[in-house]
Image (tube, rainbow, N blue to C red; front, side, top):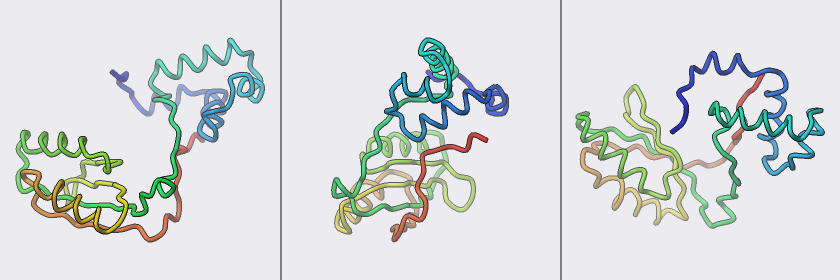
Length: 164
């Protein structure tokens, strides 16, 4: 279980060295510990201690490999705004459980406003999109309205958080 974070306090606790380490890791998480330590002017044990603290505090959530979706044939990136007809806890819970089981869905955000959820997902083509919407998302009990958008061009894509 992740530690509970007070984000303002957590951000303020990061010193200049922490921010520099995080910035370099965001650019290249495969950087060797020796190279990272050299670039931030720390000993290898000093760097490892700092990394462990950042992991224990929940600042570093994990290390991942970013894969080019198009290289895997997942050509369409889409967003869907979803409204539920009912907002009882069991309806919301059921929707969230079903969405978590859909491998095409990369992100699901609970919203305030006209729509209840925003889904970000990838599909191979229009037929895959239609099948996902018709056979997997629309039939979820409580789904009332879906507004889908297909991304034409990704103007900015980043996984790096601002650290300044």
